[in-house]
Image 1 (cartoon, rainbow, N blue to C red):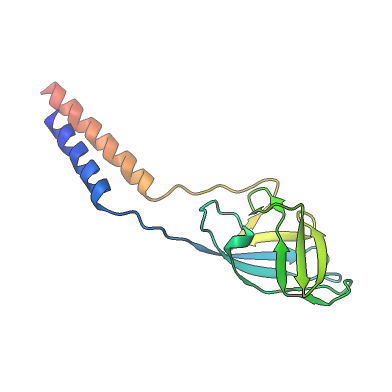
Image 2 (spheres, rainbow, N blue to C red):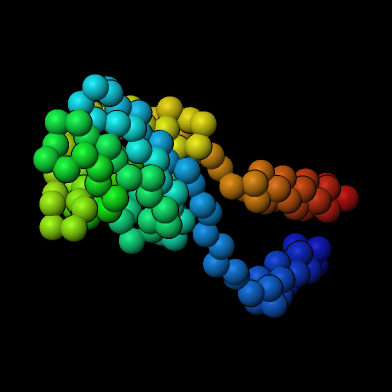
Length: 156
């Protein structure tokens, strides 16, 4: 029992002493056009500040722009509305809205592009698996070790 109390005290002290650091991860997001004759691909980089692995407009750090041959203006340099796409983007709209100056153009989110975050293809309807943090296996191994030590003490 003393060993368990000792390990519990170490865990509590280490959690209290080590400050949590807010680290955001930067992701490259690429949308490949399903109709390249009408409109082009676009890419963006975002810092995932809310740790949900989904793009939000407030996380945008860079945007490549969007070319569109069937639109009044041929190139749009700003994203102003992001659609809500399961596992991809957690925006408030139903469509992407791009603009240059006062000129805007709308595109449906799920059907006009295929999406990649990093090197991983993502389908809006299927989603993707979020990997476990590296600390979880170590934590489970430590718990198993504590259980083994407690069992050995009871048997002795």
